Image (cartoon, rainbow, N blue to C red; front, side, top):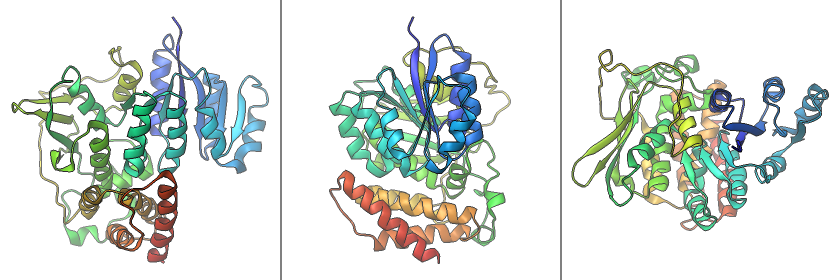
Length: 384
């Protein structure tokens, strides 16, 4: 049987490395066609040696010569660099599926190119739908391309909807761990550090997403993502703080029935399900023991976690506002990691950026690019 050829955008990140574990565990079914990274040259070279892809791309062109030299003795692996190379590699003929595990706005353009090349999308780059959900959904429909969610929450919703094609969704119950600060007061949040924020209680993720989880902006983005993936309004999405991260999300139907997907916190499961759908393949690892795990649910505090409230405001307004929120968030997230911005200041800068950047109700791709640039400039000015 022909192996499914997979391109991983962001292979050195948390999702990318776990995707490679899945591919390794099922090497009879999957093969790596291309791997990409932004700056982690040594790790990308190491992955290339192990998995022997047809090509690797380093997005930061400054690292090209170094990467090429490191892979000189592996001539079968072609080496490319730059944003344009990312757009081109996803269009390669042999590729069956593109896993978009890049972080941030940078994932939008290669995802669009992959859809236009009619590649199945395993979506882990939530910013793609946050920034340009309407455009991405239109393109996926136009080119008959499936978008299979990889986020644990959206995969859980997707799994809960299997076999329910004709049954309308009454409500989506989107779970959130609450991050490391859910029990802190506003006074305590004023003094938290990046080291505090990076200690996530249940998930091992990259720095950017971990900070977004601490502010709950990550959950706000997932609400926007769910709106586009499952065709529901924001009022049909309820966020539940669930510290144990066992119920990954659920769907409530019009008869009151609720279907949920439960499991231990292991991102390999939703990655593998996106690769193998509609089949379920064996997966090594820990199994859920409900006798040992209490299940608790709480309402999120929207005053304390202002970022989540701002995301709901962005959905309500629509247009390019989610794009503006995403750009401002990328700036404040980086500033917080570099000790240039306090924890509570992040939501303040995002809110002010939303008010200052030009609003467009019917954005095009060019509008998204311009809005992203303008929002980054404004957010940077506000931090200074």
